[in-house]
Amino acid sequence: MRIYHLLVRKPIRAFLCASFMASIISLENASANMGDSTQGSALKIEALCTIANKYEVCHPQIRKDKLIINFPTELVVINREDIESIKVYDSRKRELIRFNQKVGDVDFAISFDDGYGIRTGFVRFKNNKSAERFNNYLNLLILR
Image (cartoon, rainbow, N blue to C red):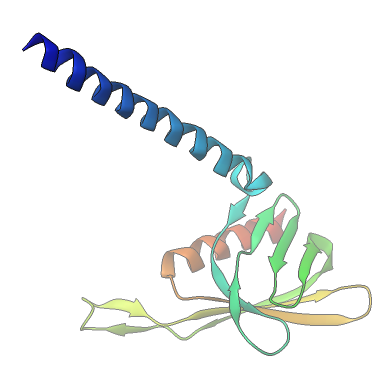
């Protein structure tokens, strides 16, 4: 019984402990590579974005007085003062099939001055909670 205890139980415990420590270290490294968006008062949400012709996955971020959107064709950093207008197009409708939840898309048309003229980019959310959070943070950004 003691030989089994020494040869089998201790190595398993050592292996589990080593695996746990390795997972903690890799999690630390992964979050360290994410940059400022995971720290401080930044908001980063997954959405679909376009500024030219097709929607692709992007991660719009709101940091202090800036709106940062990685459109499919370019990265755009918009200062609060450069935002000309924000229009919200809500195509959600209530469906009884989904227990009377709202289903659909919420599009934000963000017009801004890039120094060469007024441009408009679109940010689309499929997730109602994400659209709500983004809208709340946009309102805070504009009202500052």
